[in-house]
Image (cartoon, rainbow, N blue to C red):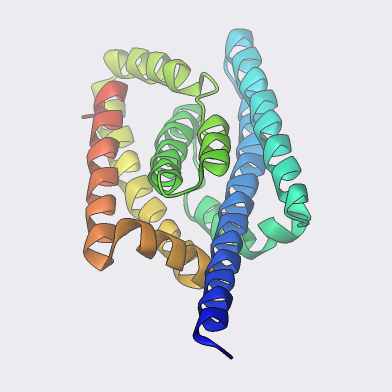
Length: 228
């Protein structure tokens, strides 16, 4: 094989590897959206007010809209959404099992903190994608209205009960640790996705800096909840 042919083949391999990483990213996002729909629909049924129930039901509907966008893009790659999601089921389900909320407010904090951390992580990754996939990822990560709703509900409850604020602050810290562990696990188990992130961040130092930024954004989010 000539040098030119070798270069062309290597470029093709890199292109295939990039596409594989993108498909992984779309798959993990799709399962995240599906999981968010399930959680919000369940939380809606336990909401203490009808207005809260309706608000969460609307958010759940928006998550399914995002899911369909990802499903359509994966189909363009010739990949069924079920196949793209399957490698991430265990990690997501393990996270949800380890962080099962015991109250309505814990559910709100979990969605606000957990989904917020995930969104921050995927926005970082989106910066390393081509324009088409970057735009899709950012669209899927649009806030469905849950942030403002959670802030109002949690702040109001904590103003009435200081001990509740302390309890939810500890809950938020636990969620941070579990979410970072989940993200690291997902990346470690998917070589193409890990390669995409390492290439985008530059090196291991870049990845460490990214996780420090995520922790900083988590602190800001907790402050907005009144739990800083």
